[in-house]
Amino acid sequence: MATQKPGEWVQSLINRFDAQLPIKTGLHTTQAIQNVEQNKECLINVSRYKFREVINGLTKTLQSVNNTRIIGQEAERNYFESQLIILDTLVKVLNSQPKDTSRLDEAIYVKLLLPEICKFLNLQNDTPYVLQLKSLASKVLFALSLNAFNAVFSRISAKLMTLSTCSEDQSDLSDLELIQHLNVDVTRLTKLLSDVVSKFRLLRSKQVISNLAHNLEKAIWNWMDNYPEEFTDLQKRPNEELQECCDKLFEQYLAYMENSAKRKASVWPFQMMLLILCPKILEEINNADGGAPCSQQHLKKKLFIDEVKKTISNHHSCNKQLAEGAAVLCVRLCKASTYISIHDRLNVLFSLVQSIIVDLKSLLFNPPSTSKTFSRAQNIVGQDLDLYIDCFVSCFRITPAQ
Image (cartoon, rainbow, N blue to C red):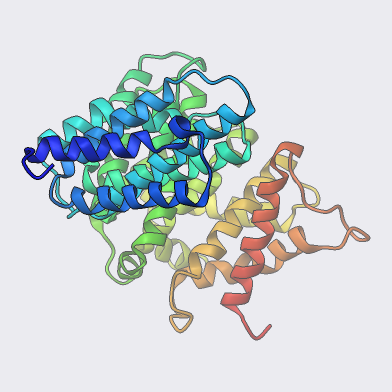
């Protein structure tokens, strides 16, 4: 092997990795697992010097496994475990790279790797293996978007342009799902929101617009989770470009949800997240409650906040869908406030939280003897549980003494 060219040597490693996957050997012994792990570590180390060759080889191995015909329970197990091994290797290879990418690397991502990863993200059933595959595919895409954001962004942007020609709800929205798995800093988040703003007026499908709100909200949370220092800095030094994007997108969604309680409930949480990224606007709205003037430009946003407060305080008698949307929105608001130092009590988010926290607790935590327990549709019971947990944890972090 010492006389081989580097490319041939890397291919030999890929071949050995491929030959010892469970789908090829059918083995699950300790020794077989150790062999796979050794091959994986070797590829990760080699990828630091021959990244393109390793990524290309792993992608082709993944394609080969994905196209394998499987018959029987044991063959299915080998099939899924081989996919898990390859995806885990891809995550580690991508995370071991410096954060810059050539155009040739991006071409590999777009033409070969990205389509394969999308297949896992779009799997429909939720068996234990499928859930693991989706989780690892999400991590691959997260790492991929850090190294080659433009490649993933271009695919999303192109899909948005394609969807602008679709009249109603029969569109393939799979590429929009990529948004919620992106690694975005404040610059990339601004670029993403700006692109959506520019194409929003062309969108006709209600399903697309609603799906877009859901995925963009996930992207904002990804940013806050992975770049919390940027969110903290934003509260002290507002980003004018980001604020302009959020402001425009907020107004666009106002027009979309007009006169529809169902649409309001679905996009209210996202609209709140957009306002959270606009601390100057929120400050103006909050001060207006104390008698300060509110500009005509932001009057609709103040009315939005007022409607949410009214809905959450009158949740026993108001429209059920609106009460649900207001509950989710208020929990998101409480959770977002925990990303700010507890000592920064002058921040407008804390003021807004205090204005809704009592009514929110009343809605979510009233015992069944005095009120119906808060719950939404049967198919989202798990999401209700997450909502309870987020609210409870956020309240504890905001006021740990209570």
